[in-house]
Image 1 (cartoon, rainbow, N blue to C red):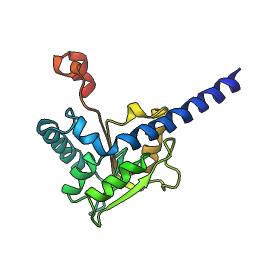
Image 2: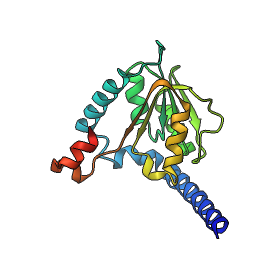
Image 3: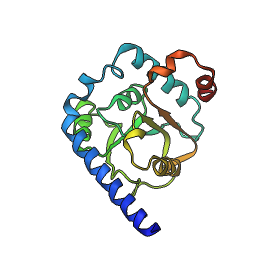
Image 4: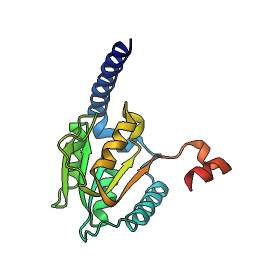
Length: 182
């Protein structure tokens, strides 16, 4: 029974990954224009401030930081990091998003990485000073495995920055959310 369950789970996850790639390849060019909850002045200022604050805590000893934008999508975080003079590896499962990012932000400090949706095969351990994950984890069938992989490729003293656009509950000022945030 356990082997059957694990086999079914594996096939289900593979299907989710294929569907995720297919959908994101289709929407890549229009993504930014339909996501006002992300691409607005207030969220962009909040995000910029949070990234700057998080980058200040990196303690890897490197003068020139290298960041991984995990699930880069249309390049929101990539753009923020490039504006902060960080070397960026923009990574995504969608080849269309990666093409879009290369076209939008063509510079020497940018490279791209095609993800398989399961792990970071081919990426050496301790590769990145900073890893940014913004509004991505809900797309990943096994997000705990993804977090484990991110920890593997983050240098000692590096920072993994995980952020998700806020839901309506965030604005109700509930003590449990304050405690979680702290």
